[in-house]
Length: 219
Image 1 (tube, one colour):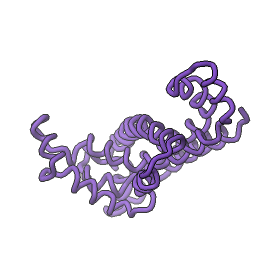
Image 2 (image 1 turned 30 degrees about the vertical axis):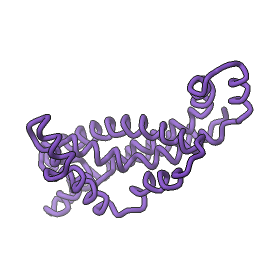
Image 3 (image 1 turned 120 degrees about the vertical axis):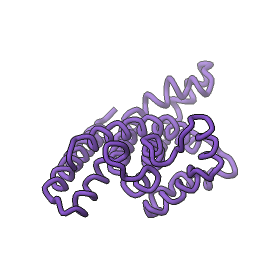
Image 4 (image 1 turned 90 degrees about the vertical axis):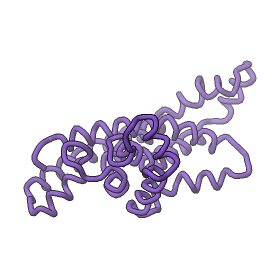
């Protein structure tokens, strides 16, 4: 790790991934918490897969989905004139997929914990389902939603297996901090690996402290 580029790239990738995972994840969590439909269990299982799959297997699936010979990869190359894989965009996608289940599971638990009587009172007052969610459900569940977003950020920041499969290990282009740490160990540069590991560990501790403080407060 010869520069701080991997750290800045990791923060940028994790930030964008957290944004996408939060928007999609909270929407999916709301549907799973409030919806009653046939394939709800299947959707929940698919969303949870990134937690239980080995990261390299998840990365292989993403590589198959986004590669140059896939419909998505071909469409991307036609639109932008360059492949999607082995780019920073691919790193964001991989980190988003890895972070998504943490956002969904935490957000769903927070939404399900909202007192149904509050939502019912809002409906009696004439609010639509979207207005009930915006005015009652999401504000009351905000602490849990925040905790899920923080966990998603931590997971996106530390992603290795899926990211290296679809974004590669290109110095000063797609080399995130976890990949740089691995690279340093392989090269025998243990000092650089130690610095990178300490930085990642410090960020993870800060995020977990925030999650603990937010989750532990009473509404």
